[in-house]
Length: 60
Image (cartoon, rainbow, N blue to C red; front, side, top):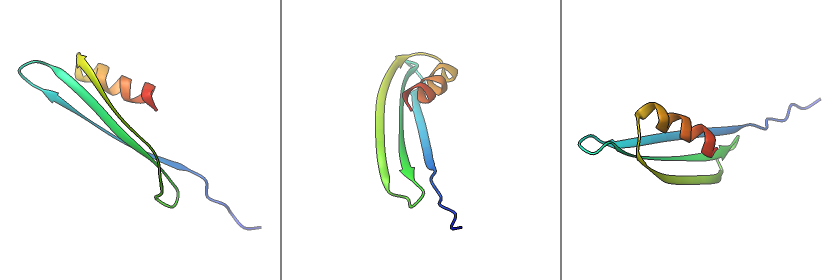
């Protein structure tokens, strides 16, 4: 039996402007061959870094 690999890699990142606390998050989903599936970019506005990390999981 041949094993088939079917997984998706999720890479995400974020940036914060220190003096205003405005945050943006982005990421990309790729398949097991590295082929692009989906990308996202979202301005989160003013929030904490913890809230931004939670938003990334909700976007995927």
